[in-house]
Length: 316
Image 1 (cartoon, rainbow, N blue to C red):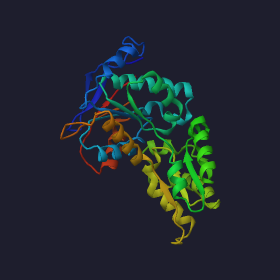
Image 2 (cartoon, helix red, strand yellow):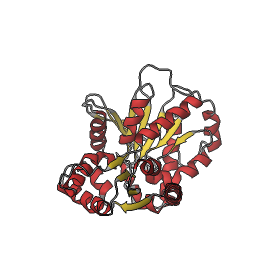
Image 3 (cartoon, rainbow, N blue to C red):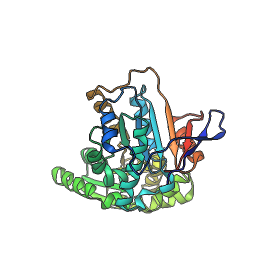
Image 4 (cartoon, rainbow, N blue to C red):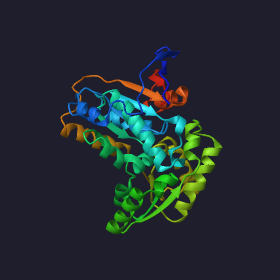
């Protein structure tokens, strides 16, 4: 049930409780009505971006770099994280709720900044909202195959992503087309630790050793970060790799992060639809179902900023 309030973090860092309209999950405003409105999308309308938590902030950084004039709304569904432990039905239901919420904010495009939610729900969302530009995450299978010299590629992702039909179909297709072997590694517990802001602890390093070392032992020369949370620990992944090879500078492992490719794809679709913003500045409003403090830290970390972003805590 949606509660009719949010907690707003103001520029002075204080929180203020205020009324805020939330989406009606009983479809009082029908999908067809929303779509009829969206056919006439305003080029200066915002872009909605969502993830199970702070992971999508790594994608948001690329979006804001490549589209500096766009307004963005970011939704961290932290209360329901990690998505990798949810069923497909739950992921579809959450994705629809968040999309309905964004449509009430008059978005012109949606970015699903989560590999797990993309695998479970992107097809449903595109069918349900045919007039809305929807960009999902694709594990960097294709660029990894092109980058790899050994043609042995490791993929770090959640169990749900690796078990999805979408990932299986894509990896099999690329494997056959490029003669590349993909070795998948489910990273149980890693998203939880990242959500805690636990980026430099020994526990994070132990988890990364547990998941990365078996890939290195099988001679991968390229590793795909198949979850948008994982770029937060890219330096730690590099540290674990260097430890494994004992500083052997000849052993180079390429790390593939697809956030930049997603930003390019959104920019092209907005251009094709004549929906690039005509404003000369931009704004970012963020929402979370969990910790405002954690999201604030993530935004500052990824945007090299110490400013206080506008964040609203909501329940839907």
